[in-house]
Length: 471
Ligand code: SF4
Figure 1: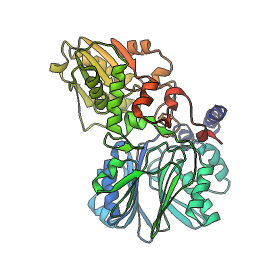
Figure 2: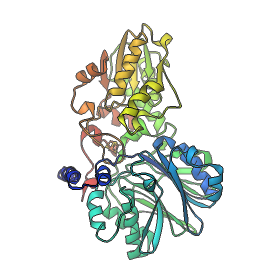
Figure 3: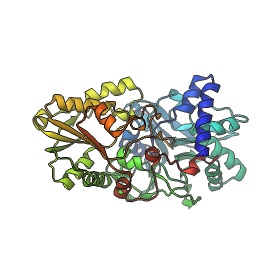
Figure 4: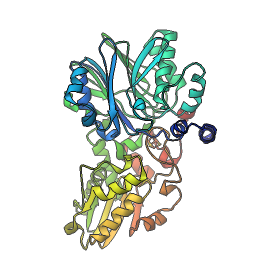
């Protein structure tokens, strides 16, 4: 807790200390959620393209691919994968070694879109990173004494730390061991370095990372992105590093207690992904069943906020015996509100992306299931939408406990001030969103439904994993 407090104090201090707005925004707002990919296989650039399409839900603001053609060649841009990569571009990236990235935030412009090329004392790598480094602002000051940072994103620190320690040890595993010792926080990282691929997952395994093998070696943030390649897949273990040169070699370099992000199961990952042996759809179904076991409300129908609330709504319906209906229809061509970077865009997109089926809703006592409530503004609009469509009662049920604390490990959960559950009671939130009643899943129920003990629950219970703040 002392470490966490010093981290917060340091960041607040940094806000007032640095006059460079870019720098301040980066220190305070390292919130992007991203997806990474790497492969050594035939047509690796095209496999990267397909995998990034499958990872698009993890970041829709920018994307890029780096390949090895005797030198590192990178193409990247702002926008969706299908907008940035055309056939003519991919043809010029032909290679059997590629890494790729999709990113949530466009903060910093094109030079901060990943993969990021980093150079130090004649060595160069390209890097794709998912996560947030908790001691970035401290280490940036230290490294800034001998290295001139080209960007204000924390991923550059990962690259420069690896190159610095590689120069010292001339060995990728030893370099990564030093990176794990030095850099705290969440990082699933893939690197293209000297004609090799180096991949690592932070010692606590906050963010998911999957390894696949078959007609080559593949890595992706989620298993669903590798499904199409017909591979054997497994999780990259926390603290595990892969180096792929002529052959593949992997080592687990640390022995920390794992801390997998529970929010990947609740909201972020695709339902067809499997993380730590637990299929995300099945987990969400179980969250809904558990929520029903803890509930006693009498409703006519169960409906979901599509899409991420759907599996839990089906689970709730199965357990309670109350029929499930499709009461809200999603416009599939509008982005997810949670990952829109500005509040104004988020507000507009709620109205654009959901519409009620009046014939399903009218005169019904509706049990509305969603995965989480962050600010409460989206839920307020949905409840009003259902009432306008003729719902007699609206009972909101949330398939996770209240989010009360910010995330410093790579998910866009805002400050406590913006989190409605950190300053309002459940009754007050129900009133605020206009619901007849509101109930959240219990913390114990969540852990039971996920079926893992080594979870990060910090945004729910305020207990931040100590390793991530051990600096
Ligand atoms: S604080 Fe919450 S969102 Fe962040 S890593 Fe932990 S569980 Fe995930």
